[in-house]
Length: 60
Ligand SMILES: [Zn+2]
Image (cartoon, rainbow, N blue to C red; front, top):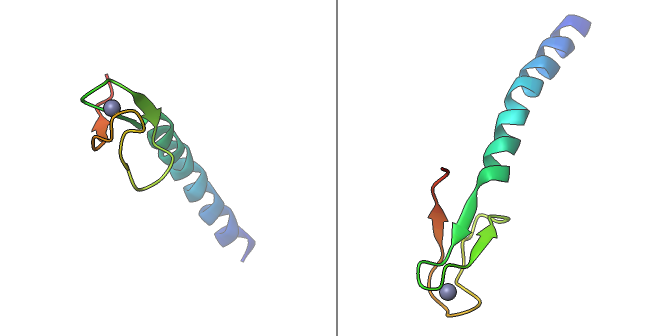
């Protein structure tokens, strides 16, 4: 039982950093005025400055 617990935790440890890295790099921005924000929720929403729909910015 103990060995199985170790396997699960190691699998989680391998996948967790990748997910955090993806979230940390994700940026959304406004194509109209160039405003950029970190993506902090599943919904992109609209630009606070001009009301345009925000788009996901590609990672460079
Ligand atoms: Zn804008």
